[in-house]
Length: 253
Image 1 (cartoon, rainbow, N blue to C red):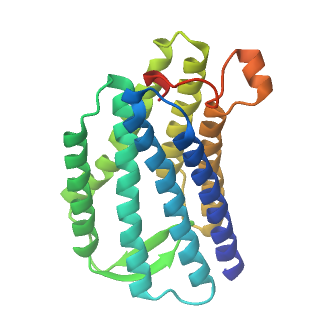
Image 2 (cartoon, rainbow, N blue to C red):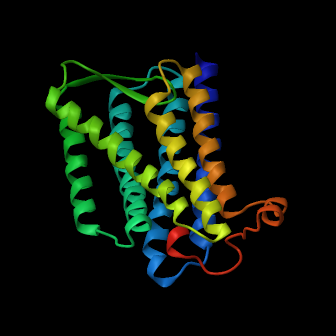
């Protein structure tokens, strides 16, 4: 078990490195002035994933050396909740802008503020009494069952906005006419959809499952990296360009 937890921590650190590099390269690209905020929001998504992976790795390394203390586990879990809400806000805001051309900052920020408050209440209302590392993630053990209505709100808020955003983003492929736009929309949209499918549908009941799940999530990050930094052979064959050349546009912000 200790060796598995060390492996979990190692792969999570590797995943964090991939996520951070994707965020850095997206942050450095040139985009049209009206798309700068959307680009920043997309960067928050990737840096948030990197931070979340670092927290998981940190806790896994501690747990590998012995039982995880409840205060440490709860603190890490609550910090991760805040990070997760921030990165979900970033990707939801980014997809909203790319699809509609408008930011809608106030309603999206209000929704995720309410969501974070609901998550905190969801945790404390169940009387957390223990913490374990399960499937490469921090899992709290509760003394009571959750309120069904609150549980449904949390699950729906996690699943539907992100899946709808990814699907709407992919739908832009039919509207795009320029090769680079179509290429980036296809790869970035597939990357987002893959990440959400893995996060919500792939089981994580064991640490071995967690290792496989982390690997698939890294694959999603690599797809986004290839979308913005395609290899030379892909550029020549498909007639697409890298983010190192030219200014960005709204459809591939």
